[in-house]
Amino acid sequence: MLKRRPFFHDPLYLDREAIIGRLLLQSATAEGYPADLILQNLAHTAAPKILNTSASLLEILPDRMDGYDPRKPFRIAAAVHVYYLDLADELLDRLEMLPSSYDLYVTTSDEEKAETLRGILDRRDDVRRDRTEVRVVGSNDGRDISALFVGLRDVLIGGRYDLIVKVHSKRSTQEKAAVGDFFRAQQLDNLLKSPGYAANLLGLFQRERGLGLVFPPTVHIGFPTLGGAWFTNKDRAAELLARLDVHIPLDEISPLAPLGSMYVFRPQALLPLTRIEWTWDNYSDQGYADGGLAHVQERIPAYVAGEGGYHARTVANAEYAAISHTFLEYKLDQLSAPVQGYAIDEVVDARLHADTYRRVGTRLGYLKDYLVRYHPSTVRALVRLRNGLRSMAGRSVRETTVR
Image (cartoon, rainbow, N blue to C red; front, side, top):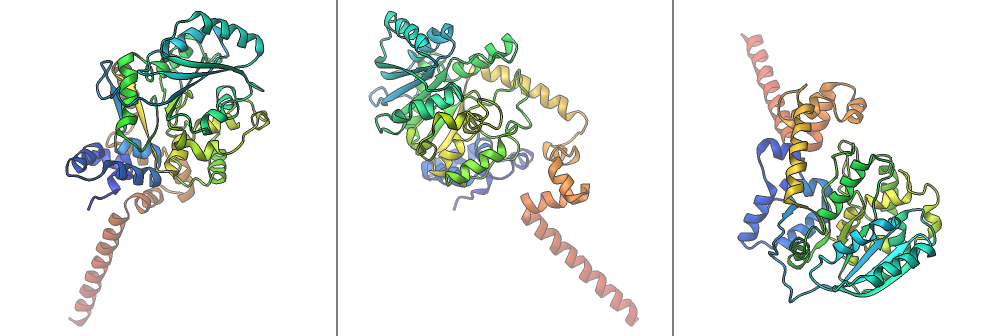
């Protein structure tokens, strides 16, 4: 028998005990357990971010092709939303990193931009591109997300493609230029860094039939995402997932999501989301603000995929992994300074889960609540110990009374 708990237990507990789910999965696979079935089961039952952590489903891909079989190419569609024309060539250059041919679908906000884009495409000699279509969206509310789920719905549900590569001309104009540029590079470099890197990414889909989507790790440099990346979208995400008949547990603090909205996915994995005929009007309530449909849809692909037994992976190149890890280690070191000890103890002592703390009222109450939720076997052992001590104390009192 293979115990499932290490793959959906609290990662802070696994960290303290040095229980590494990825190594357990490798050992199980080496002994003949079917990895595809294991991941299919876990994707359907575990919160995606917890599974991504406990099984270490981040892949650091090299630039040299290693693991892609060119004899088994995918039917690929590239979904590219271009609002900023000066970024068009950068996106098209990235797509030429793909190891096999693809069909290109470009969406943009108006006919003038569409004509400019057709001129750019005509001047280019993209050897991988088989066919090209430029479409004008009915509204730019929802931006690249509405362009995908409304403007390219026929591409998603037509059954013509094995994989969709989704990228867009991300600028983050609300941020400083350096922050926006880093975010765009974080997305593109971790998906289409080089020909070898892109081939290795597609190789993941070749090896894992249950892999539903891959995307970069959560961006945290330049953005306060850690500690609450749901922002104001969690309640609406829960409502939408219920509407889609998706029952995957929601991660408590932050979603496992393609924040930045660039990812590669199997159309079948997102079928519950694409089955609905979304309209441009669905995105007009809040445009692209938090709480609006676009921001909600940005955060739920991994949860939608999980309902069908498809798991998600995050991917990164070695250079980004080095940059990210050093900043993460420093930030964690600074945040841990006020409360020394294991991370699981720090979370309790620092009351980072303030909502639970307020609900139970006291620090002891929080600890009891935490033990009941995450360590029920420990609670049962403590209850047995308490009852045993009470029984011993009762016998001692009776013996003293007799004497």
